[in-house]
Amino acid sequence: MSKATLGAAVIAVLCATASVQAADLPYRPYTVNQPLNGYSWAGPYLGANLGYGWGEVENNLARPSGFQGGVQAGYNWQSGQFVFGIEGDIQASGADDRFASWKFSNPWFGTIRGRVGYAMNNVLLYGTGGLAFGELKAESFGLTETHTNAGWTVGAGAEIGFAPNWSAKVEYLFVDLSRDNFVLTGTSNSLNFSTIRVGVNYHF
Image (cartoon, rainbow, N blue to C red; front, top):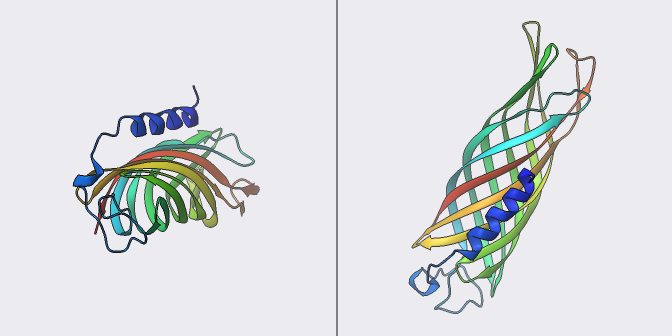
């Protein structure tokens, strides 16, 4: 089973096992056309996440992978069962790999994404996509070269409200950072990778 398939399975199980009653969770005034006894996803939130990423370097056989973790913040608008929002995050990453004399790593990355989702009371299913940015680091024979590039990202996830003001999520993202010329390799290199992560959010 691929890691992307595993991530989809985790999302499905998480949604299927949600048992919190939405009537016990808070209504927020940022919601438009939402029943007063329904769970509201609207408003600002702040949270943290932990995950694992794996990918590949263009024009090199290095396959950086490793654990990642960071923080996210966002804002949602809700109309009925439809949720629209924007989210930004910044991540520290331990992903690295070595091929021959070259070692590639991705010390950090971040995203700024739109989110579009469908809410079933306290369960939110969503798609997301937008801007990605991050660092690709190359090392060879004691020399180091780093490039910070922008690119794009797309993904999907599920989020569940489990207590007043608190939610948990599982999310898959594919990130593609644009290529740049590396002196150490004598060619252009870029990084693309997948990440599966879990997180918690506090809703204000």
